[in-house]
Image (tube, each protein chain N blue to C red):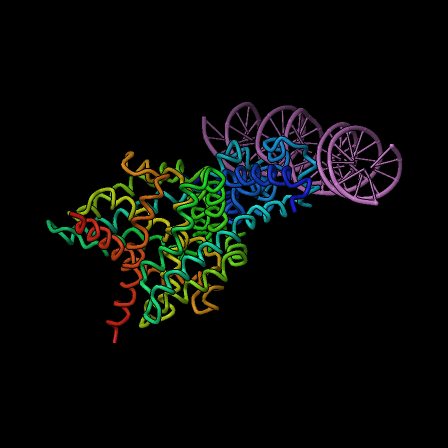
Length: 218
Length: 218
DNA sequence: TCATAAATTAAACAAGTGTAGAAAAATACT
DNA sequence: AGTATTTTTCTACACTTGTTTAATTTATGA
């Protein structure tokens, strides 16, 4: 049931999401957040207890639904494959597409959220702990699927390849405008449809290259 | 000629590097930096004018020598190739190896520096501007070399593939411990030798996959 | 050696920090 | 209706922020 304070709760989270995404946890003050939300300063602590709790709640808010959608996408791929190994490219697409799709079509809140994830992911302070906390169960499911798609590839190769995938994907969400500068406008950071088309084949080829390289050894 | 205050200058930069790398620009105070450096608080402003200038100087300090070494590595690859297109994998290795090598063998200051780069790179606030400022000329040289290595690949594909390379490489420097958790200890974030072996073939295969994919179209 | 410049210290500035408590207003429930 | 509960406001606390200023110490160079 919708409670009374839910509207202000959401206003605070929305404002916090936008500002944390732009300047990180320490770069934003509680007063800025509540000012942007149009509510009194004390309400941030009233609803969330502390700035840190507010930060956590912002990260958690979208993580759950997101992971459900990604899990569902993975299950669809696996169901289609039946007893055969699933197609690697489709597994990677199930992993990335729900994210890219929301960032492209979900409105500016999603863009903020993913930009925040991009910062958290690459910070020593939050990167290991928080990503593990919010995304590990799902990621382990995906890695298991990738292992089935590449039955002859050693685990070590799989994990490193996943690491590369993760880095490439997450940088995309930062939308720093770097590729715009480098390409003199030919490519745009915000064009996630371009990423959606290119990332799965790019990464899948990388995965397979590690496998082949390893099989050459003996 | 070595001036009188150079020692304290360096002490402040070293402390700033370590702390900025851990918690970012806003997560660190000038007093923390000078305390760690063992000097008076006012000296940070005496030598660098402002906290922001200190931050910039820390980023710039290692960028120059680093880019020189990478440029030299690229030139070596190109010289060996002569008039033929250079080998893609070796171009990528020239791009990444000087970084991975310093992080692995250059001492903890280099680890801090790269962790800082990892944060800056994925932040909307600094990512576009600063990376462009400090690394663009070199990156453009590398992209030109990659284009020669892949003469039939459209520019757009090259830029996106470089974007993926950049994300994968830079996440490595964050050393968040994520891959350690995921792999239950099989892989270690700090094992950059593993990255050095795997990243070039992984990325090279990705580049080639985009090319092939594009040629299939018509 | 001694004036000059550079480096360091200590103290203070005005502004901003996260958070808490008591009073006021708004809503819910019987 | 009127009591109880939730939500909002206002004010304040104790402390930290980046930066500056003036005084003091240290080293330089003729």
